[in-house]
Image 1 (cartoon, helix red, strand yellow):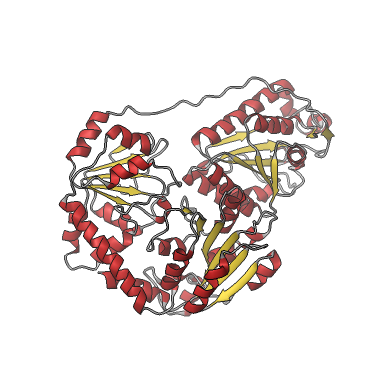
Image 2 (cartoon, one colour):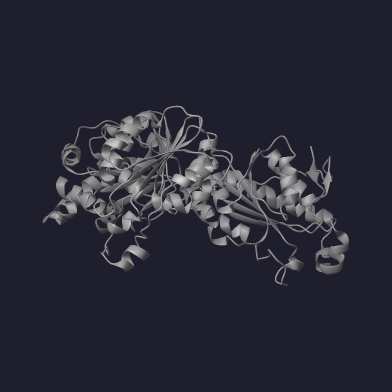
Length: 578
């Protein structure tokens, strides 16, 4: 083993080892050399080299998403650190334990004109669980500290060591216990490449225990309201696979007064649940008596759990037709998404429903009616698919139906995740999407990072803008041969042709839709992917037969669809099922 000769670098590495932080994603640089040396020379750590810091952070986020344990990203000083911000924001809103470690210049070298120098302390303060700003060691490069940073000498090396240990422990605890991103900023003075075979420091006893702020719950009151409510709705957002116990799922499914609305990202399945929310809500919007029908759907009691909701239509409906009671179940936080939150119950959904005592009840008119609506739109969707031409709509039907059982599925944002809501996923599939901030910027990087430790193969379904935006994600040595990408290329941001404001002008095509004529063929060659391109239904179905077969390299299947008809066919679906 070998360590940097700088105490702060040794301290971080030893604390990470003590707390079991094993996976380290490193981007190249000089200022972070003390950390790179110490991590890569220690057999405990698994280190990954990702050049692009934005991709590196999403890659680490994907690993942390799968393992549920903190993963660290390490970068040099300057603007390199700022490239982590999109992934940090995603981790913040998706409750993913990401540890950001940035090497910094000494305080006396900041804002004097030195290169690769910015104000790094607290730079993520609005989207971070904790910021640990370590103090510079005064025992290292002591002659430079004495010459340029005399004010630092007010602290002894012993007090600096104690402070740094406490800050690191607190940051790790926050990431681990709160499932939040944290930032550890470490200033280093040159020389940066000194090494020792044994650490010069010994860790002290540092304990950090976060206070739990759990509110008191009157279970009898909640149970009584649950029993009395004849129109109950459960709405589930982003949820990890297998998070809800099967007994709880069965109890909810057998409750005759309860509609359980799920999304593809909810990873919850039952024949009694309602998995395509927009197929229920969109047709109501088109009815002349829509107000009366929406009032009929309006719940007395709304219970939500999981992360953010994809469907804009259910959000609009519940904001306009608010339930009398809205409870959100989460140990950590509760967003008032519908502007009517009445209770935040700080526990897990399994514990909540176990305490509530939910059980079978006879189907009420509320549930019977909407089950009938669900059956009708499912039949009409089949009829619609038989009569429409090749388009994004038919492509998603074929793609989702062809995914082998047990796969890990990653969905890019924008049109991709929204189309996926309209089609049934096999219950064995594990579905993920960066819905914390819903950005297109790191979908590919996240999927690749998530695939590293997955026990099953991974498929990424992505749109063209998301794919090309994050193409540096393919620049690494960690792509598994069973990694698959389906790229749906409709030559622009197709979602903007669906949203209000669409118009056939050059300005719209250039600045909103961002029309292009790119394809992935040369990227596939450069990064060592097998590549195939299709542009019709027969070609797609033929290609899907062999796409998931074992191969020595990862694969990209590029599916080209007609740019100007996709929006008409999607909107026509909601008219057809109305």
